[in-house]
Image (cartoon, rainbow, N blue to C red):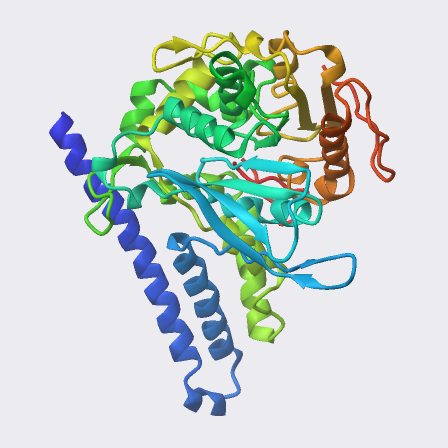
Length: 448
């Protein structure tokens, strides 16, 4: 059975890549044929539509295997000068780097922020708008995870315990004045990493921990994601989803949950929405109304760029975070050593949830505050954003207008005095107590 599965995995992985490559070639062919100069003499819209369909199809399938650039715009200072932003790796590891967004000719700011990006099918560039919104006020770092298909088998495994240890190393490197912001999937592991430091190296703990839309306790509020995890057995997930990287990539032979398979499931959940968006873009191209940086291209350049995750990371996440709820039950272990969340006593903790979040529903993330029983209530804060979906709470309009000011205020409170709250910013509501779809709207939802 093992040998059969290995052969099946290679064939399946390469078959998906073949289908993607073929569609990209068909798009390029249609674009070239439809743009043939002689056809300009024939006043028929079919040739324009053929060329437009080819452009949209070629671009859609080609960007599935391309990691997007960060493309962070210059930061404008108070004196009106533009400061270029350089993306610089600070710590390099096999499965992910700690990256710093260095703003040229600007001294370090007191707010040091580590953005913990999800490893769930999309690259860390999913947080591009989050980074851009924080850079004028913060010194920003991010966890930049690597595509598993490009990591040789000789680099070993990478599961949620390894992920947690990476976070411990990153936070320790940045120092105790770091404010950690974990977005969605890594929220439970960021909480665990903080607990590891609290017990092993208290002086290296971060100053504050902000958890945004994360599944701390998946059973607190059921969603389609949690229902899927409970409905499928681990054996079924292993057999149906896990494949072996084909011979085209450096990680040949590594068992992964392929990015193309993840993307297929993302799109299938809202097939009608994506089909309409594709057709609308074809007609926009044919009319000459589409552009390189229009709303459709900006969104789908990021959404269609997917990465493989290691099989052991995906399976251990499903089993230990969603099925056995090790974080929610405070029974998580790293390298055989228990991680006690009650050991966190000096780190300020804030949770952010979206009222319309159908991936990490309200109640899942705020459970962290009860688990951190050693943290004084005066250093805990929670916010429920009305009308916000999953994507909106970290990158959309709700983030920019309401949540970001609250997060900066929370960070400022820890810098000034942990026991004396800082004055609230105007323009954002006060925190509210609170108990895989996709949209091109800014406050839509994206699977992370």
